[in-house]
Length: 220
Image (cartoon, rainbow, N blue to C red; front, side, top):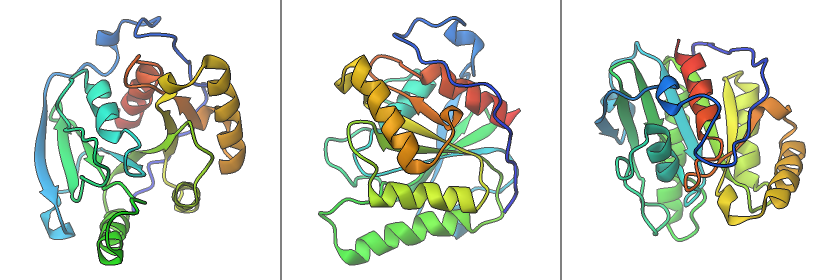
């Protein structure tokens, strides 16, 4: 595993809307985006060599919506009202410079034990490879307390010394006061510093520019 861990010195900025202090086009400008592989095993991974931004989270946490928000495209990554639809590792080539790696959602109850194990093996197998793990974005629904699988993911990323941030999704579903309270509670549960938690909403654009900045910094 390549250790590309970066020291994060600036705390995240939380935005009230899609309007931000820096114009969106100046932050991680997207010139091209294409899916290059939907892999079911490591032999199908694209050749290693360029930075990778991995996205991991529970089923129905809003991963596809967040990818679309980061790319400023409504339907690039397919969203579904049915959890557990992503059953492959999807590699999206961005600007011919780095990959978004969309890992299968975990924790969906309405699949067999065998299928759950296959998803776990897919995710674990990816992180066992010698690849450029520049940043992992761990997605957590801000409306709920820290779940066992989310805690395990954060513990794994910490122990593996992988550079990561936790994106708290679906913030538009609760009030601003509750956002702050929930973020503080989750940060305490995860044992993380403030700069490792970013409150986001793919609906309003909250936190999207900050995530773009982190991605840009990680792929320079």
